[in-house]
Length: 245
Image 1 (spheres, one colour):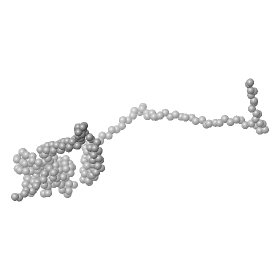
Image 2: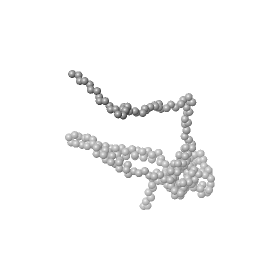
Image 3: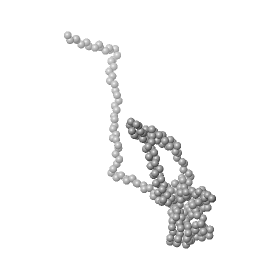
Image 4: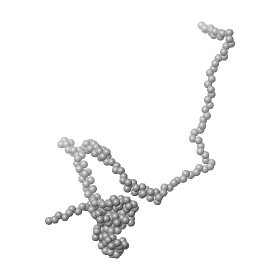
């Protein structure tokens, strides 16, 4: 018995071509998506027939079968392509959506896959919470059940510290810096900042000094000196006061 090759989940597959990424725009994005190395592109679609016969892309409206259309454009980084089955020029059934971010093609998940992923994440988190709760419980024959959080808190703190030290911020690429600068320039041109002009003061209002100037007068310090005695004369002795008995 021949074994069939295992098919990968398309939601976990991505594709890109580095040669096309610097020059992607709405006019060549469909040519980029229709590259032969792209695993999301079906060679049996109407787009391939139009491309091989060198017809105008407007001829897709008159054909029936699988086709790809450019559904949404948000330059310069996001493009959305839809795969659909056309029944008539006015009727088409959507099959799958693909989004291209920074030149990398991904398949958009369907509603069932989104619900399944969210439920699985919630169940996983609940199971982890129950496991942590059980690890906190303690049992003693005389005291019964109790809770102990000291050891666990220390382990959690040590784990968070080691995780922060191991995580390092990755440097941005030249493509990211150029595209971010382009987006900021477009936002600045579309929404220029408003400059608030200061209101002029009335002519009668004048700025008052913050503090009054105080003038301090300083007088020169003079020392009292006794008048000099003439030459040849001596100072008389001090008078003796009588003692009172």
